[in-house]
Length: 563
Ligand SMILES: C[S@@+](CC[C@H](N)C(=O)[O-])C[C@H]1O[C@@H](n2cnc3c(N)ncnc32)[C@H](O)[C@@H]1O
Image (cartoon, rainbow, N blue to C red; front, side):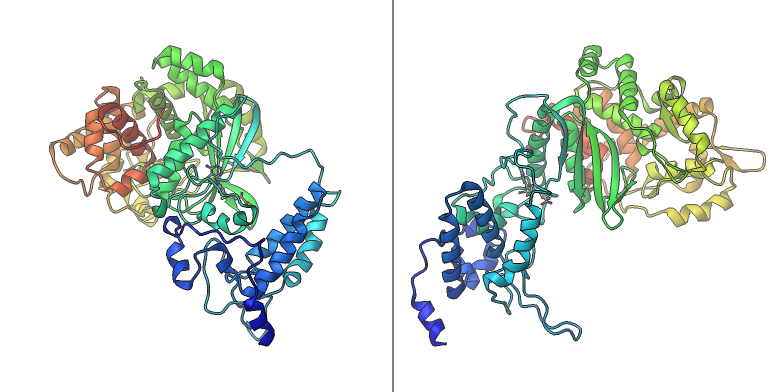
């Protein structure tokens, strides 16, 4: 106790940073101040401060720059674990004492009521061994790597120079990286410029829109770095659907075309495809490409003509990799399905401020005429031959999981179910109804028509009262009729005022698509503003129409990242 008292009387070593924390602008600031932590050195007990002061001074005094950098880096490994943030690890399940190394709660500044004070060598002995191995000659080649720490949104000095970009951006809320950096950065007397930090942070007045704008800035910069025709991979760990949509919206408005979305199973390190509309509740990997310059110029010159639309589909299909086959099973490629190709074609026009030259039924009909269909996927004539060969070697094609939440996904499910190859084939109402109800997880806003009505509007019935998928010609007629009925419903919404609480989201999509073709941006904005905000943020297509229409209609558009 006497020794501790003597230590407490010593001055704080000069090497120790004492800089004040910007408590008011820190998400966790209100948790720290009441515990007496308002400056960096408050994170440490007096005895720790003396120890760290000596080590830091010694490491800084090393004259060889490379060795000095290594020693400072090694020192950094002690900072969090020797602070008050280190929680005491109690005896667990009969084991005597757990390790006390780095027991702080990751991603937050949290001081527990029982802390654990450890010495530098307690933390460092194991680490030094691992660091020596990691930086040993076998793994480390000086000069082979460049590390830069500027914001991802800086303009590249040379454009079109990168072959590939992999990015692991923040996922909205949750982790306040710049704030968390203070503790280590203060030792180096530097500080992250948190202005371009792409997070949602109330303390810094950054909401979802601000996050989307910052992500857009970063993606726009990536777009400039990347060579045309090359790929960007975005790793995305889910937080909310709204954030997932913000990322997709930012990606597309920066000019990228999304070509594949998969879930990453971290335990098995494998990838699985997901439907674009399904909730992003897992780790996702998005692959997007920058279109070839020649195509883009052609597309703009075509100015929203039919040629431009089919040219887009041709190049998009060419960019998409062939469906993969593993152990005799072909994985069905979501992106090659008609409805997603339509969505991508529409989105590409809207990004380029062009009217969409085809309605959905016209598009589906044209697609069947121009491209080859197999297993519900479309291919260019050149790709179709290869797929056919592969298909002959495969035992089966794996279906994607489909979440039936609204009319759009319900129709996809019904098509699949009534198809002989992908489902149980033609069925009576009594057969399909129990299966349908099992799959249905309707959202609360969705005014889903009765199953019988959906069957009636979209399928045909044979002599045995079994519903079946119509042939392409009849399908086009039915699609056109359905479109009419959706627009009719949309017109009903237009007549009303006030919030729309329950509605057919397909009718809203059809109405927005029609209004966009008519350049009637006002209708889109007015109807969108009557929808529940959460729905708007979570529905990628509605969000896209709304954002783009806002820019063209409103005098004071919301702060939105747009081309
Ligand atoms: C999900 S983390 C990446 C984690 C990393 N892959 C790893 O394994 O350690 C996201 C990172 O993006 C950084 N970040 C946030 N905004 C940024 C911006 N505008 N430019 C560059 N980096 C940014 C954050 O500081 C954080 O380190």
